[in-house]
Image (cartoon, rainbow, N blue to C red; front, top):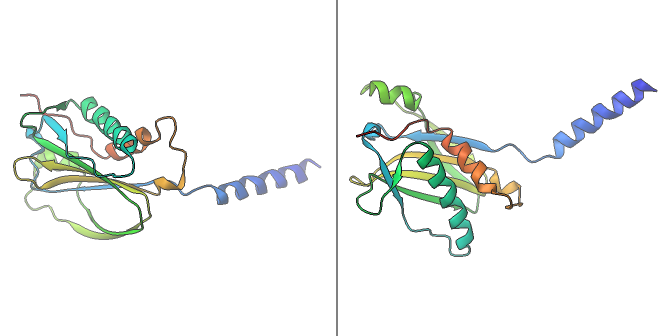
Length: 177
């Protein structure tokens, strides 16, 4: 009897795992043109979600929290970084890059470092956050999370966890001038 219960329990666990939504896919890439040692302030570009200002507010609050936790400050006058974010509502083919770990690259700033192109097929509901150098208007870092819309429960700071997962890929701290 115990053996039967053990087998049924194992089968139930396997069945539940097969039915659960796929894990969040999180990745990032960055530009070797970024002056990561010089950034200390940020501000947001205009939110482009026509259908939900609450969504903009939730995502912006989560990003602000992550940036401030890294020592960056919000600045309305001449920020070093501009932040853009978007949720892609359909599947997306996206070109990313395999690169040295960003923290290691910032220390060495190796001019001989190379990019290895990787093409991704990202699912609908991909959140992409871009850090833009305010002086050059170049995207210097991009983090993205796919498969986030598989869970339609946006309660209890849903985006806070997703944004944190994206910013786990950005271990840099603001410069201290």
